[in-house]
Length: 189
Image 1 (spheres, rainbow, N blue to C red):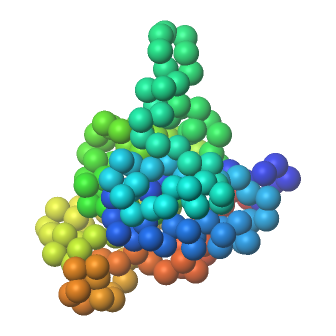
Image 2: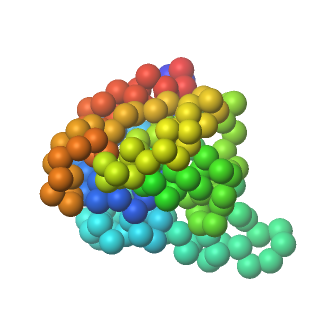
């Protein structure tokens, strides 16, 4: 890693796995002393988080802030600013809806605009899917994951456990240690 501070853009989408974000941020800070972390939230992810507590750990950016920055031509564009700031983008958790958006190039919120503006050839992307087992096993999911992998994104596989719905199966976001290790392996040198 270079001497400059390592900047991680953590994009959180609408999955109950957002409950792990308060554990993920300190783990990243411990692994990468002095790193900068900005957390970008979709509107649906906010449902699972205590934003007051989370804001003590990292800079929080909500979806609606995209439109608070830009008022007229020549003004800053938030998703471009965030892409320029970050050394690595981490999509954790990445819900089924946003996975579909990213794989198909849709960009209708701040998180998906970041993905669309990201330079996949120059800087790393780590994505950590999290969804119900039936959603994970749906025939459209595997091709979407493969699309992101073809772009050079690092895939952190979901795990088998008892999910929020009470059923046991694959789809839960990977453990914190595995995510931190994936970021470490893909961090710029």
